[in-house]
Amino acid sequence: MQIVNNKIQYTKIHCTKNQFIKFCCGVLSTCNNLTLKHKNLFMKFPQPVSLKEIAELINAEVVGSTTSQAYGINEIHKVEEGDLCFVDHPKYYATSLNSAATHIIINTENVSIPPGKNLLVTEEPFEAYLKIVNHYRPFHSAKQLQNENAVIGERTVIMPNVFIGKDVKIGNDCIIYPNVALMDYTEIGNNVIIQSGTVIGSDAFYYNTKKNRNTWYKKMQSCGNVIIDDDVEIGANCTIDRGVTASTHIGKGSKMDNLVHIGHDTNVGRNCLFAAQVGIAGGCIIEDGVVLWGQVGVSKTLTIGENAIVLAQSGVPSSLENNKTYFGSPVVDAQEKRKELVWIKRIPEMWNRLNKLTSENK
Image 1 (cartoon, rainbow, N blue to C red):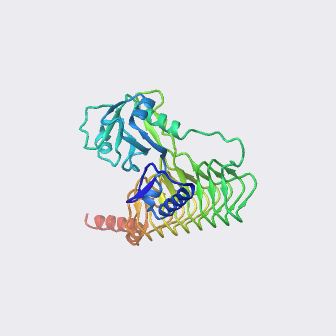
Image 2 (spheres, rainbow, N blue to C red):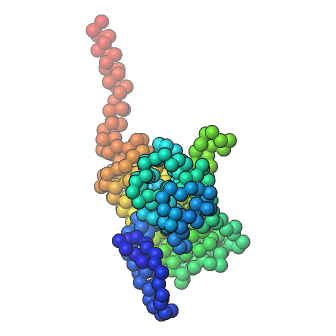
């Protein structure tokens, strides 16, 4: 495996043990310098898999090269070259075919196939996605409170009744308070504080919707994780959902009050501050230094620019520019909103004056 232009490539190597260790250290060093965009692409296969093998697993017909290899599977917002993605509605055929994904699981071959792309044609692409995920990232039932594969750093305090799932990594000097749940594959940096009752890495609120079946909403299996950087503090009874196929990320130095929810695949920047009952939907980008005061609601797949401040009880339906203060639902510039509220308070007075003028002219 090597990193070329921030992308993972696999090659066969023949070397001594010492050469292999040196090689691995070099790869790890390079990975640490990857941008957030690539670092968070989580659902990669243990090794490249041929399309022929994938097709046999999901009972699909390959249109293209059966010898081509897939490196992972990701949902459409997170795919990169070499990945599989799936699409099962004509409305999204073009989006998927023209995405970064190299291999598209689809329910028709009557589409224009861009150069270099391959199709895996099957009647139910969503079911095929589930089969692939469950094959390469199967569910593991917990047999103990703390998984034996978990890695816990030096001087980290784990208080009673903390659940630590499979392959969880916790850095140095952390404090994890009672009744916290750290679900499978969660990664936590150094000097992190997590208060009681918080759940990190719960499944994404993400469903495949078809109203021609008895169960309209079928769960899209989550196989991503949550990454929490150094010096983050998370209050009591917060929930941070893991990515569907990638990572939900909380940046260095960010702080959260109690009862905060972060949706799947959201990237929170450095030194953000979220007060109680803030809710952020999936797929958002919250840039560095953003402040969200109490009960702010943020809609899905939008960007809030760096150092923006959103005042309490505001609703954010679309992206916001940086270095501004916002208020209202839907939010607008806070100063403009204050002027609007002043005029609203004057409506009764203006109405009375209008009635008086009208009566005087009769």
